Image (cartoon, rainbow, N blue to C red; front, top):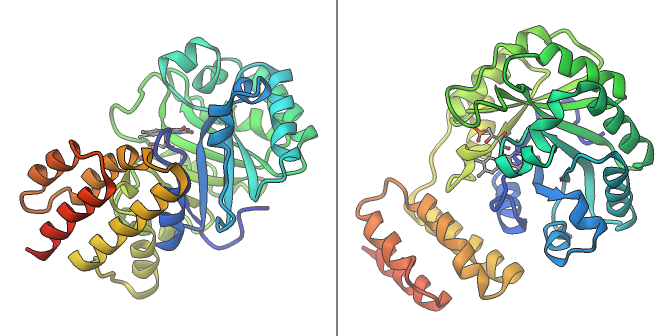
Length: 314
Ligand SMILES: Cc1cc2nc3c(=O)[nH]c(=O)nc-3n(C[C@H](O)[C@H](O)[C@H](O)COP(=O)(O)O)c2cc1C
């Protein structure tokens, strides 16, 4: 089981974000588990190079899961077999049944799977049977209304024992607040392990939930952008009752380290991929918008570092 009894902190799967470098940085700052962005099951069975590249896992990753999306049971089964045969250093395979992106929904995958729970149950049961790695499932609280009890029942019947619930409906997308009222209903459920997702974006909020619901696990997505330190902050707050924010020196050290990982994994393209992260890291610092705009126009790693150093010294 990839979830142990302690309250694991998990880096959320985020398309275009939860890549090797960001997962590694998050582990360095206290994440216990990380999930890849969603990977197209059909792309895997068709041998798409781009899809395969999303499945890369670094040797130094400690507890990573691969997330798959798709809607065809046979394709999902084959994709799970491919993942298992690839002997990757992974701990679990997560099935995406929550993505609200139009393209994904139109294809019957992601959140669309919540429209037919019998089918979801059969799919999960089928992939579980061919997998020698634990299987989990990530869902929303419903498709267009809250049907989380039925969703959990279907997943339970499939034999899958780990579920991540993002407290919004698929229709909601990212609008409104994440409704965490579902947590109470499953507080006494000993059969399943639950991971809570949605708007847990401060250490205080995380610890409030963890104190109240010690059996649940916490997933952090947007709260970790430019702030992978959040995992350590949560652990410090839980342990000591307080946490110290990283200072400017530590922040810039982390940006440089993250940047190095980016170049290691993606070569020169890492310069482009790193831009959004730098924007997130710099958010809220004086005159950071100017620096961000400048960096977004630079194509060379050494020139970006020079600009960061200049800013850091001032
Ligand atoms: C940019 C972005 C990409 C995402 N990509 C995925 C994905 O590939 N698979 C998935 O299950 N959820 C995805 N999510 C949803 C997150 O995993 C998470 O459930 C959601 O953002 C709510 O948590 P948060 O408020 O902590 O961000 C994505 C979210 C964002 C913001």
